[in-house]
Length: 393
Image 1 (cartoon, rainbow, N blue to C red):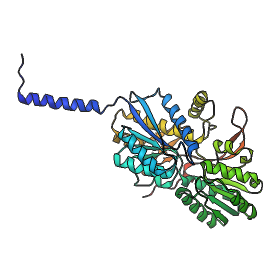
Image 2 (image 1 turned 90 degrees about the vertical axis):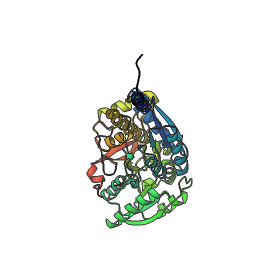
Image 3 (image 1 turned 135 degrees about the vertical axis):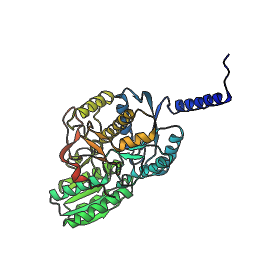
């Protein structure tokens, strides 16, 4: 029998301790916590985001770092407080990253929790410029549009159409108010007159009085700073008095196929920034659209496309690191590019964790089978240097 010295026994115990710790750091499952709107004003986006993430995971065989991916979804009800509560619970339950939200207010609240707990946070929908600022959160990344790029496209449309008198309707929400304030200042500098402005609350159901005021004004353009069910209700009620026949109706992100389907034929002609579109011509997008249609028997919406693209990018980067060290994931993503994005090339800026990308502008048009009845026809593509300011600071 071999006799071990106390020192050797101590060394073995220490080795055993480190070995146990190493195995503990290599979990059996890659857990993602998804916090999205499944109810409330932006509830129409949450389910589409889940579908996009599902396709992203299925296309890689359901695994990353050799382990199965498990997603737990939570509804933030389009409110910051539930978003914080559910994010905290998901992290406590072992989520190695957080995905979401839809509402910028919820996303900003989630950012604080993710930063405190040092958990990576992926944003593919919320557009408030404050989400990605120089010196912001180390752990939050956005792969989708900013309000800044969308409002610049709206301003370019205003100038190209030679609109001189604008009536603005803005959801009473901090991000959209900030966006409207920027647009108003820049439009006035360009000689555009703001003839009226209204700020209805989120979830407003009656826009008839606002539509009537616009009809009685001398506005030649109607700028709508809203989205979700607000956009559907406003455009539908504007259509009831045929406002679109005498005014150009547009907005930074007012329209997509989801909105058009909810509004119907009077949505045709509305122009808007577009965050993703299924008609973008590249191999990655064709493969995604085919997989999405096969599984869900429909074309992917902007929310689905952005969710798919961001999650695919994130999981690819994590896989390439070959480690379960979250800090390594963050460092790698901050320096990454995605050549095979469904929207064209995207480059993550290390300075603010915002993806540089093209800006799409489209108009609601009548679709042709097998497309939906109403589709966004992409009429302008803005290169990144036209819609993003340099990352100073």
